[in-house]
Each structure stands twice: as structure tokens, then as C-alpha cells.
Image 1 (cartoon, rainbow, N blue to C red):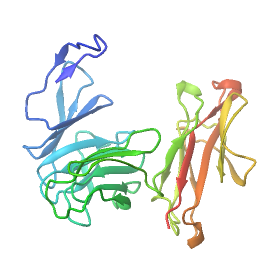
Image 2: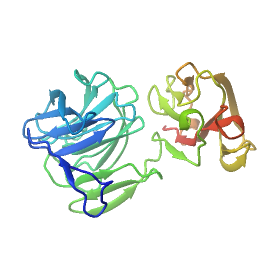
Image 3: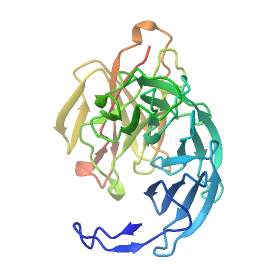
Image 4: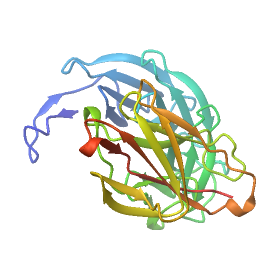
Length: 322
């Protein structure tokens, strides 16, 4: 069902309806709706860009043929699904071409538990998994998902439908909210590998605020492929990427500085490409002493449309896993 919340927040009128199949879960985003048609065993990508006309872009059968939910990343280039058949798994798809999704990988609970709800935040897939509790899985290399963290909310085992069936990872704080049917409500936060945005960013050209994310696998000792991905900057703009050991909240030159430059830090100077992006390789040496270390990063870029000619990302904090 589709309602117009702009017309009334307390009594929104219904303005559309999809009835071609039973929909167990729907994720509307960017002109498409991603429908988990659990009893049909598939995920349907519905084109809503010409609303009220609704057209099917594609329909894809998921491996367990019991599609519980679907979620996409910010760029709408990746989609993840969960199958709720017993022992059902996470599946990752390339949806760059909405009419032709390509399955890239699957990831299953190491204990054989059933994956229930899956969400993407940045490069991390968060999920509830019944008897196994909660998982955070790195999908920065979509063909090879990697387990970052887990938290078991109960003593149950097996592939049954008891335990943790709810996971909400979209809080700005980085806290993860979990609902376990037998043991109650949990608030947890991964101790490493899952980054957190913090502080205040400053928008520039096109009203965009520069962003930082990671790539090449989550931050871990010995991960030589780890990199920081800076994007949403003015095309070809000069920039400085700060990587430091402490955070800050300091107003200067029209931006908020989120890295403490009085503490040890490294500055990388470069320029965005024509798409307003720059990737910086940050190989993590294979030194056990680095495990547990936390780094704070921010990109500041020249931008004639920003206050005092600058734009800046929020802070991007990550802790290195052993």
C-alpha cells in the first residue's frame, strides 16, 4: 500500500496499491521499491519513478526461495536479501542494471542459524539471525563477504525461529538495537571494524556534503587492501584528508574540524577526480599492537560554494580489529 504522508501526517490518503503478489517486506528508495515476495520466493524491483504507474524492472528468485526482506546501499548498486527458510542465508546482488540483477555471493550463519532481517549501512550488512543473535558482515568486496562482529542474545541453537528476529542499525550513534523474542531488548555496538560517522559536515557545490567511507575489506591488522573513499566533493577540487588519533569539534574557516590536529595526525593532500571522488590506500601493517587502535578521519576540500570557500565531511571513526 502507498500513502501520501505530505497530505496528512495523521490521516494520510492511500494513493496507490500493488497487488500482483503478497509482499512480506518493502524497501522504497530512489525511484524503486524492492519487494520481498516471500511466498513466491523472489525479490521484485518495482519502478516507481512514474508514479502512480508501477512497472516491474525485474523479478529474481532468491537461493532459499523464501524471500523475507531486501535492502539496498546508498548508491543503489548493491542489494542484499534474506531467505527465511530454515538455515536461510544472506545473498548479495549487483543491481547497477535494475532489469538484470546479478548474484555476487551468499553468506550463511557459521552456526547454521536462519538469517531474518538484513540492512546495509555504508559497507556493512547488519542482520538479526534468530538463535545466533546479531551479525555485522563486511560487504565492501561484495564477492567475498567477511564477518566483522557478532553478539548472541540467547543460549538457543539450531535453525529454528526463536531468538533474535529484529535488528535496527541505522542510528547515527552507531548503536545497534536488537529484539529477541525470548530474552528481550538489547543495545550493542561493535568494538571494531564497523565505522561511525560523527560530528558536523559542511556542504558545498550542489548542496552536497563530502563523505568518507572505507573499501577493500574492513579495518583489520594485516589488511593491506584497506582504503578510505572520499566522495561527493566538487569536481577536480583540491583537498586535504586528515587521519588522526583524536577527535575534535572546532569551528574554523566556516567548517567544523572533526579531527584534533593538536594530537598526532597524518595529512594527505590531493585532488578529487571529475566525479568528485578520491580513494586513498591505507594499508594496515601486520602488527598485532595496532589492534584496538582507533583513528579519526575527515576530508576538507576547496569549494567556491562552501562557507569561506571550503566544504568538509563529517568525522569518520573506525577501530582496527586484531
